[in-house]
Each structure stands twice: as structure tokens, then as C-alpha cells.
Image 1 (spheres, rainbow, N blue to C red):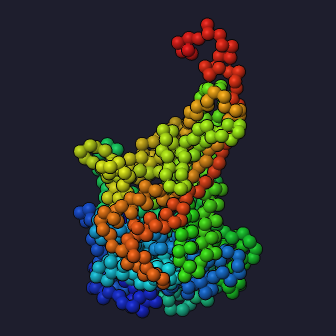
Image 2: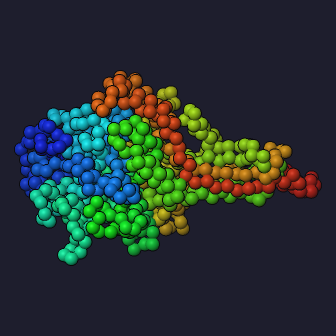
Image 3: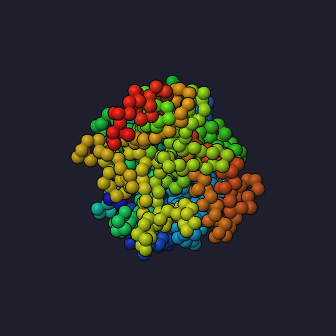
Length: 616
């Protein structure tokens, strides 16, 4: 059950390596002693009257988060196998969640839509600075301007979801009455702050390894075995996001009272066959996004004392984002992570192209010259969640279908994309997979996703309705009647009547005209593309910055800081780095003979006496 009360967040002490000052601790609230917050920290968000209120302050953690380089000194690229924890993490969006230019441009829009809501975003993207109290008054600001360090510094508040942050997370050892010990949304994480019992005087570095007497050599720092770190629930902390301000209005205009689901990747997984432990398809988030190293030998630490072949989760953390890692690689050389970013890009491409979907094109063996070729394209989702999943604004997949004659001339196309402009042509037959979210208009009784000029708008903290969600369900999906995850404005049939399980594939039918005289055969090719950020989304963020007069970015870099707003920075990067180029995921084709001996009406003899009103 999700926490129904408001919990404060702590600030790190002034001796933090990332901190020079900290807020004065206030008096511990009445529930502080009751929950034993001296040893752990629960993070939650207070919401009142549709707006965000600042969290209370509790006594600071006694031990700060260590900078990533502290871990990289032992867990770095010591063997050159690209499997060690630090370099594989370093190029990921986890490590760079606070450097993502899309995030910063969207944060400005969010803060403009609901003042102060940025604190809600920073909790996942910048947990070190957030825990230190630098994300809200009086010790900070919700725009990130109070964070410490340079954006492109390896060790700073901009170090994303760091090693120390994840490996100090734990289950709540003393949950309140009626609450569960595990939290699976909105960064409601618990951070271990107790002295570890294994050695030393700091908190435990928690992970999926135990070191019994006579077993593997233990690490030379505090450690604790943690099954939680092999549990998908840990990922739910930041991969289930619920609006702090809005409730969901259904298709009929009824306020359901359900907090608006911004993204539901973790829940989608729980509603799939991949979450069934006894099932043949069982796989955790870690199984797919942190696959075990297969080379032999392989070690997690430069001491090379325990060979972990087949038991070393590689810290890839990749999804479908190949664009932002390329931007960060080239824009911020001070990070010195070229190899890490290149590895992340390669892993993301592999995930998209080999592990996410299959495609099949079905077409008749022949088509009459001058007739219509009826083809079908099936996309099957191989992933453990919707495809695509995650943050939905600007994120999309689509089908590009081409018909070419024997001379390779294009005779028909759907889903054409112009890489020079970033424009996706939305023709009459195009299939785009996305979630279209908006705000409910009580006058027109519609979920509005465009402005008065007909342009798409993306106000994710104001959204309270879903116009359409046709993203493909995962195998075994049972969320067809769940208001938070069900398809909207689109139908996925059950695997069998009454099963309550939706199919994990989608069929799209195309009618392709074949002109007379077309050289035979005609080849129908279908490609599935994925794109991180659409042109409409990037231009919206730019326009919001201009219209609302957002200030120049306040975050320092090691070089000269750009004298532009974040929306302008994003648009500049989008323009210079190939406009968030789509990645081709899968390709399918079918060859069709153009038969000049067949009339377009299907009557081979041309005997008009056989014509009827049904077959003219």
C-alpha cells in the first residue's frame, strides 16, 4: 500500500564531500522517534489542495553519500572488459539523469505550471542534492540552481543516481501500521544510515552478495547482503511516477480520485508473465537491464579475488535512449567517459533491435495490376512492460511501411520520416505507438492534447486525462481493466474470451494501391522505429521558454556556460545532434507478384455476364 501520510526528507551534514553548508535541523517531528528515523530515511511528498507543499525537515543523516569516484577507484575499468561496475554505470542515463537536457527543459515548464513542483522531479534525478536539502527553500531551490558542482564534473550533485545512493537503499525495517516495508513509486526510498556490523563505522554497502565463513573473500568496506537489490521492487522507486497534484479523469469525464499515473513501468511489469516467479518467462528488471557478465574470468573489484562469471550484473541500465548519451559524450569531454557512453549506445541499440520486438509482414502471393494490395504488419512485444514504456512525453514508436517495384522504385509509403527536418508525416494509415495525455475540458467534455493553434502541448504536471494509449502490452498482461495501465482509445483483445489477459501483439492493416504497369514483383517492407524526443515535444519546450521568458540556465560547466534558457539549449542540441534520430528496431518484408493476367476486379476470364451487384 502506498504511504498515505507525509514524510519529511533529510539534509546531508555539512561535512558531505558535495556540501559546504546544510540547513539547520529542525525539531524532530512526533513520528520521528516512533519510526526510528535515526537509522533510515523515508522519502515521500506532501500534497494538499492540488498543490505541492514543502516537506518538513528532520535531523540530517550522520553519513553523507560518497562521490562516485570513491567507488570507481576499486570498481573501475581495471581489466578492460567493459563489465566492471563503474565504467558500465558511468555512461548510463542513471549516472547522467541530472545532465539530461530534456530533463532540464521539462523541469522549467513544470515549475512554471505549478510553482515548486520541481522538487518532486529532483528527488529521482538528483538524489544526492535532494537529500542534502538543496532542492527547496530555505536551503535550496526547485530549479536545481542551488545544486553544488559543475554539470560536467564527475563528482557533484549532478552525478545522477550514484553508486552510494543505490547501495544504501533498503526496505523500511519498521513500517508504520498498515504500511508495507517496500515502496514502489515517487522515490519513496529508505536510505541506510546505521553503522554496519560487518566492519568499519559507516553504513553498509548493500548488494546481492553474501560472504559466509569460508566463502568468497569479502570486500574491504562495510557490506550487507541484500535480496532487495535483486528485486524489481527496488526499481519501482523511480520507475513508477504518480502526479503530486492531479487525479485521473476517465473517458466519460468522471474524476476517479486516483492520483494521475505519469508513468507505470514497474506496475506494467507486475501485470505481466515476467513477474510470475513460477512461470517460464519470469525475469526481473535486473535480469534484462543488468545482464550477467559471461566472460571468464570476470571480477567486480580490482583485487580480483572472486571470479563472478555468470554472477556479475553488468551495470548497463539501458533503455531505448541512444541520443542523449551521444550528446553528453560530445558536449562534456570533461567527464572523460567516451568509452562508457559508446558502450551505453551500443547496448541500447542491441536492446531495441534484438530484445524488444519482432515484426511480421503478411501479404497475398499475387495482386492484380491496377488493384489494391492488402498487407498486414504484426508487432510482437518481447519486453516485460509496455512497448514503449516510461516517461511518455515526446517518446514514440511508429511503423514505416514502403512498397517498391522490381526496379526498387517507391510506389507507396506510410510513416515517412524526414531526418533533415525531424518531421514524421502523419498520413491516413500511419501507426504511431504512444500515450497521448492531456487536460480535461469540462466545457467540451474532451481530453485536450493541443492548444488553440492545434499544436501538441506537454504539461505533464497538469495532465489529468489520457486521450489514447495504444502502446503494446507485455506478454500475459492483466492490466486491461486497471485504470492506471489499461489501453485507452484502442483495443487489445484477450488471448481467449474471459481470460482477462491481453495479447502482446498488434496488427495493422494497410491498403496499398498498385498502379497499372508496375514492374513485378512488389516488395512490402515494414520497419519499426523508436524515437526518444519528437520534434513537436522539443519545439514545445522551446516555445514555453520563449513565451514565458524563462531565464538563462543557471548551472555552471567547466567551460563557458551557455547564455540561453534550458529550452533554447535543448533545441540547439537537438538541431546539432541529428534531431533525436530514430533507431530502426526491426525489419520485415514480403514479396508480391503483380499479375497482369488478373483483372483488378478479380475475374480472370473477363466474362462480364458473371458480374453481379456484389462483384461489379
